[in-house]
Length: 522
Image 1 (cartoon, rainbow, N blue to C red):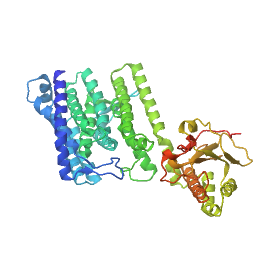
Image 2: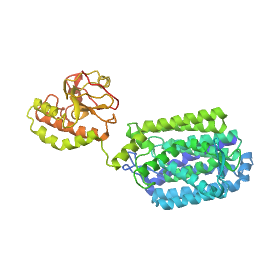
Image 3: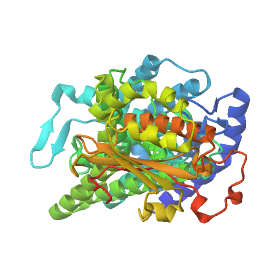
Image 4: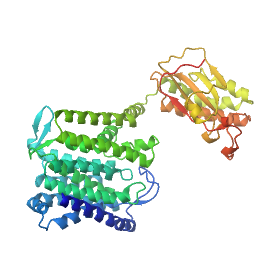
């Protein structure tokens, strides 16, 4: 165990010392990530961090290998495997560095990944059979090579795809590596324990500079290198009972987050009829940012998911039958919760509707009415005329009711304790099963003095994004008319300081969308 601790600390120190030097090199070579597009960083950040990670991994091995320790004896005894592993890893770092500095075609990168995976297969990292729960062993036969290559290449690209936030990929790799190290230690696999301890140290040393706000990114050189190590060594770590058999659940659970994100990305692109490997901003970390989470909180949420998968993987590998069942149940619950939390199903449904050009009936009604709305409000010469025009739009726009409310403090608004100042309603029944409502400030949120709440029926019982956009345009037209007639509900001038508002009633309001059944106020 002392040898593993030494390897871990030496790798961490080496990586931590080398990372600032690599950062300077990346800046000189122009290997940087600029803000914009799919990149979420707000400033220019150098890449090539994978060089520091790779060197941090190699230095302890070079120190231990020639020694007379028991660990060194095991590494020398498995020198063929070690050399093959390092050869494939060097290929991964090399193609990653080229991509970070000059950009490489996707096909060329894939070919190098396949070659590296084939090298790993040739030195003994095999998937000859898969051990499935309740079904026993499923032999791969002649498909052992392609299955092994697909697994390793898949993990390489999964780690690459998850590398979208500061410290995210490094943290995910660290937790997955902990799974392999724990399993290897319990099963007395010295070869895997030594390599995992070294990899964990190299990742941790780099993470000091990569966590938010990141001073350097690992780039493709790092994600390819770490993905290759994890994909290859997970075969070693999952073959304790039989050298040719892989328990499929352990590596899948250990790498659950990147595998989940990759599969959903592929499914999303297939449904959108785009190339499977085309880039986009639909990954799980992008979804969390779009939901309003800060950069750091999004990473911490995904860290917690990775920790859960790590514990589940260890439980499946080492636990008894009931413990395996509990671990699988917990991991499944976390996965379902993540899918629901980030709204993947809703996202895919929306993409399907947009591709099929299908819109809900309420949206179609609003689209027909909206072009003539500016002309209607343009002739209003008083505040009362504006309200009469709005009331006249209820039936043509498919609305059941509209309420005018004073802007109130957020806590009051969220409690729905504020009665409307004015209300216009059609004499129709509002079915609570399909009733929806949404509220908008009149003008910009920070200068609004009132808000409008719209109510209507939607067959799905949900406010669609298209309806929200169209109603926002309607509210903007009304705000302009109120400003023109000098209404008391017109938004304050943008130059007016927030503190000049006369009463607490003039504090900020925010839009609220109600996606559950509602009842009409009486």
